[in-house]
Length: 493
Image (cartoon, rainbow, N blue to C red; front, side, top):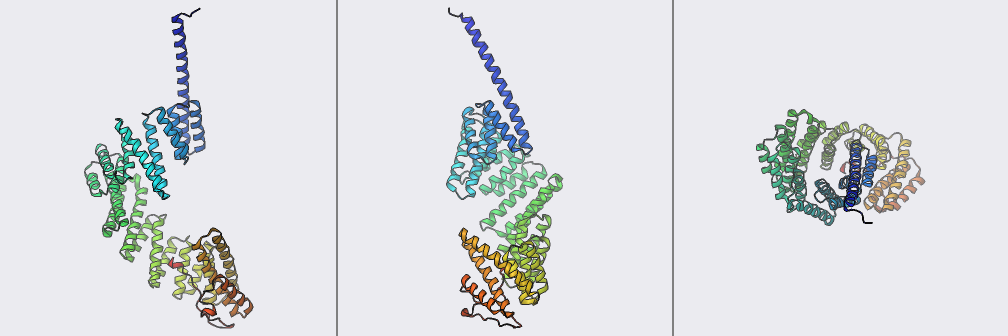
């Protein structure tokens, strides 16, 4: 018998009601799981967060929220292939979901930056194009928001043809919300891409941002201009003045807002060290560069850029023959970075070359204690005993043998790897060690052992100038003076 229409409609309505209740239950379950996942991620428990996000997706495979959340998370965890696929799927499920658009734009930018760092310009450009098309499509559809504009600035700033547009968008964002830090950061990025530094500084001066923010982002803009000038061989003096002005501005910002003091101190340190590199590498103003590097390190002892600057100045002074000043600078460098074995080795070399042999030996011993597996340092420590202090030759012999073993092992590893640079370096070190051992044995009347090491030297490098067939003179047993040691070039590196 045919069922009455009213009964059919009533049944259909009941079924729809049950489905709606099921959908609501699934939706509530998804929301609960996403909230728990966010809490786990915030506490640094990535494994638990991923498990919860996958549970949310299992509970509602077509829920764009769950798909978006897992896709964003996976992209942030360097699981880009699956993450990107999920974000594209989220947009298929809900084309208007801004959260998915923003997450996908961020993921594409991260992919672009990774390819760019790997030197893969083709894939980098492709990802940037995808991100730009994604955002442009939302703009054409009439979708607009501050978050969308911020992503557009990031994307456009990375392309050669979008910098001007990026700056215009950033300028509008800052004008609308002069106290918004993300908009101010976007302005600096866009100004750097478009090279509109003066316009950005002018806007920051009149936008009405809180004074500490004006100082902070003016510092970022001036530092960006300085870096551009340095990298593009522009006005070096302007670069230094911009770095030093940026230094003063971030510290002024910290005085106005003590909460940013630590971050400001770190930035000021880097601004000083960067100014030091310009002062020395471009302007050859050694003393000023050294003072800037020392000041930068004093502000932030973790600033490796400043420490490398100190090493650079010392090495260049050594090359120029100013051994006394180079020695003093390396002495200071050893004081402020006592964990650097290369500093101690270079200081030892400079003390040796200026006749301060006991100090040289102490420095080499310190370097060897820090890097006991470095054959160059072990060899250099031994040769001070052999050639200059003329004592404890049994200890020198022991160290030479250790250095030989270490160098042979490194040479073999370099040959396996096909590393020509490392092969050349270890052949040089091993040649120095074998020469020193051959001379040590000869001076003690151990002529057979000496001859064996000269022959080993020939196998390693038949062109060594210490060999007699190449003009070298073999020292005789009992001699009171040895030829100059085959020397460390550490300070030149």
